[in-house]
Length: 450
Image (cartoon, rainbow, N blue to C red; front, side, top):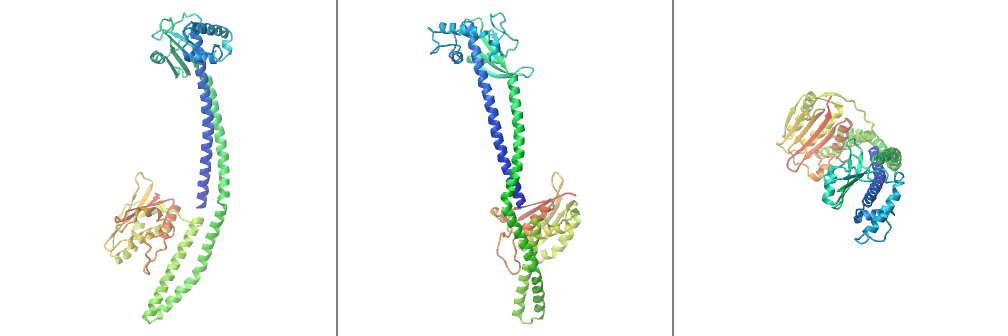
């Protein structure tokens, strides 16, 4: 149990480290990508402004502000009808000065496409560099909205950031479409992503080892206490078994010789208590061995048609004493399990079903293959009072009883279903319960097919 707790703590620490790594790596990647995006958009706006200025086209406010921000237009106000000519002349002067070092600055790798109203390239515009790459959808969007920003991919798969701008009427160029190839930036982002993945893997491995160590240190005191508890239970059970056996034998002998009815009744009660204590000790010993993994199992193919029929023949007498009907529907299949422990599990469940079904009721046993194959199912169903929904999750807990009204005839310890689940899971199987008040209870066992 504590080993599972250690694994869960390790997974929790590891999950936290993975989330932290993803947050740091994802944040870094997003910031770099955002930096590239804003830088590209700013460069495209500046380049577009320079093209407007080169052709003496009045600059829109956004292009004017972009050029001004780069220090290529020096003025303290936005362009107006009276200052547009002066601003454009200033922009033209700076753009002319800038053309000499254009290939050496960040605007050098931007291509420019002067276009007609229909998106056709204009190749005879003085001072313009045209390419054969034109995105017609961006042209339509720019003519509708004034301008358009978008990232597309060429036919060869190269990403391109495009800015398409509609030119005021009366100019030879109707649309400017400028763009920057993002292949180099994409390579940088890919290298960054690969580095983040590598570092994230290293960090995850480191945190996994550290989490396993920390989880071990965390549960070590609990593990020591758990081991001492199981050692005490095992030792105490062994020590109690011998005197209980002697008490049982002595009471049986006295009961045979007793003639007084009152004495016989008293000795019968003592004998019942001794049997109850002996059963409780056996159950505690079995649970202790299951918890410590000391229980040895011999898994082997079991023919359920023969195995179940023989076992039901043994419990049929108990069912008849309770005036119950025992039914069976068995499909011949083979499962892999330990026959001794499988019989113990089925006896626990059948005993519960028989004792909790009122006289005249029915207890049914069904054996079949699970849908999809690979598993064999054993279903035991009764039409007893059922189990409330809020108690279904607790029925496998140790010492839990749905109905705690014990009697001298039968007193449950609350360990039966807990033992059954541990034995089933030790045989690589599973167990579940379906029940509702007034509708009976069905226990479903699942084991791997042989």
